[in-house]
Image (cartoon, rainbow over the protein chains, first blue to last red):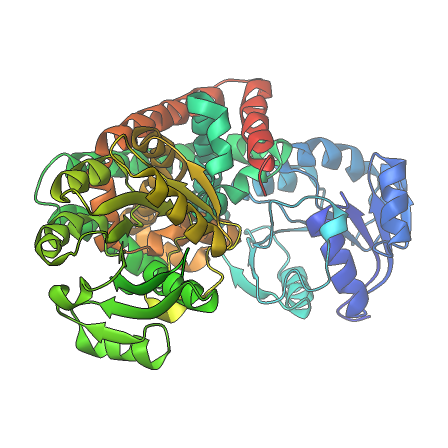
Length: 283
Length: 283
């Protein structure tokens, strides 16, 4: 297996971890897939569904792999890695699939000793759905995967991980971790924050109004169904970037407020036309 | 045609007007459907697609109908109705399908003389798509249609319009116009406003970031593709209600900002859990 790995450990068998497991099996890029988690019963179900070949609740056992994929909420990466590191054999490759990169990459690089090759990656393929029940081998097809190597990252390993993600159908892009976090603060973290706040605006004004939700409300708040456990970590770890984007967003709210308070409404229309045009440049 | 109408004029053959035309024909509730508009070429296409049976750019001609449906942007209802009213024969029923009701109903009721039966209605079945090309007979199937009768509305006509909407598959609900506007300021108008502002936040920070949009950004900004022409009218006509909701929303943004600035993150998680729970109570 020049490009693949004999044994792959998925630390956190959820939507993303489970989907990667399925994709690697389908492409013949992993001989054996170990699922690590805390919950026996859940892992057993994942095994039954054929997502993993073996499961364990022992980090030591999960460490016996050629590739380790950190796929838990980002907030537990540090603790997990600190425990895991003593069990790892030289040459093991570790990747993470977290939505925040600068803090994660800086922290984990300090923990791993020489001989352990760590590469930060972020597949843009999450969902409001959580759990391996929603996992599918084609989750990453045509999805972007951002890889954030640093000066310390082994170039051969980066190439290997690039090919691994490409084999799942993903489109790989390299980026500085700080740049990644700036972009996704705006393009993903801010929309999630807004969505949670919009639903809580309904909760504050009148919970009963929720039954009048039409397709517009539903699509603009779909991501408020996302996991709070996952998102509190992302919000905290990328706080500065998100707060900056939020400030700009609040200025835009003030702008439209001002436009709504004066006639004629030509400028209000132009404001919306600008948004419509940019939004229509993507599908 | 006890429940149906011999001739129906659709004033503004777009997504909603066109879909109602198709639904009425399918259910045998209209013998002849006239499409009124300003653009000959567009009307000709609607005729060719079988959405309307006849078209005209003369309001006088469109007035020769038993049921007239106002389906243009709400901002032109007043002007159109003022011109239309002199051509109407006694007994004509007029409905509108606008997203704002209090201002519309109050204004139009003053314009119509005795003998013209006006009923305000709002089918919750819009889309970011505009134009009769997207019209379909089942657009209103299982959609809510809010009817907002007043003390002046003829009760027999209200019942007839209720049955008309029900026959398209819609679920009719009666409501005071002011209550309608409060609810939809929150459940539809605010989400649209937020969506336009979120896309313009990207325009301000870096337009190029748009290519990193994932499914979350896309679904939460889909409605920013809506018609600025249509939405500037809605924003202006329901301004006070929308601004009130916007104030509450901004307080929620401040709340999450505060929660993000302190550890532990239990309260931040609870804030999101509350939103998730309410959002999950609908599909």
